[in-house]
Image (cartoon, rainbow, N blue to C red; front, side):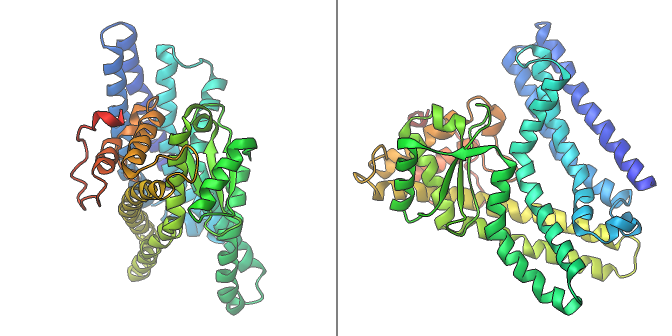
Amino acid sequence: MRPILASAMLVTSWSLLCHIGVRLIAKQAVAGELDPMQAVDWMEKQLSMFRWLGLPVIVLCLGGFGMGRVMDQIPVVADSMAVRSVLLLLPGLLLTAATWSAENYYGILVGYTTPGWRSHLRSTGQVVRAGIAWLILPVVMLMLVSDLVTYFAVDEDVAGWLLPVVMLVAVPLGLPRLIRFLLKTEPVSGRQADWIDGLLRAVGVGRTTVVRWNTGGTTFNAMVAGFVAPMRTLLISDRLLDELPEDQIAMVVLHEAAHTRRRHVPLRMLSILPAWASGVLVTRLAGQSDYAMAMGTVAGILLTILILRIVSYRTEFDADLQACRMAASLAGRIAQVPPSESAAAVSLGRALRRVTMDHPAGRKPTWLHPGLETRLELLRNRTSPPSNSSVAGTIANPAYR
């Protein structure tokens, strides 16, 4: 119990620090000692720092305290990959949720968010559900499938060939349905449905289910779940469909279509296999060491983050460029699609600015997503991005504002 208790105390203390930090800034903003915009900027920078510091905290919990090492000593956990994955991911999930909770807490203190613990939990839960739960739960479900195959298989040889078969079926067919179940969705209907369907078919991404992602008008987002037609699903949030003009909606749809045409989803999935293999290799090289499992887990997590960062940046840039080129190829064929590559770049740039207007933090680069100004610079030049992303932070052309 010591590693678990030590990890719980560290995560709790770290979460309290997040909330205390934003409370201090909020008090200065309410008292008029800080300009409101400056206070928000300080709050965002502080929470960004806490998110980065969360990485060594996770490593300390799993490796330093030995939480990863004791997994094999707990009867139920030792026999289940799903339960083990949940426990190993738990520190990171709680740390991330704490920063979102602190951000909402700041809103309550300065008066632009509904007060009350129920509202606070609901708002934080919505962000967790939209921001990370749809990524984590499918992985856990795949682990659960693996557990079931191992449990019901007649022997190890049967499990050895049955597990890959089940995974190959579950990933392309089951994950889109699971994500639609986790998120509140409904079919897009009427003229808008026909227009989006025609747009997808025109660029060769037909037989894709398009659904409206109901977020209560809180989220601008779109994503593709799955990569095999007809199980593939395009989710577009309610706010994006209701507030963006059609030329910008068209560019968002084409951006997601580019992800599909360029096989970015399976590419991202395959890219983490070397990281997982490295984690297994580190564990085996550690032999009978008490820290073997912890070392392998930490190595796998760190390599996964590094590889996903590289792949995510490159695929996002590529999708922006390909969307502009596809729009130019559709000139005059589909209504409301920008007629040229330059016009498409302007529309996509305006869409990117609009969807991040209410969330300034979304304009900044993260570990897994390029910053807004970098993408606008790329759209203006419409050339392959430099490998070192040196254009980050440049001033965007006024045409994209």
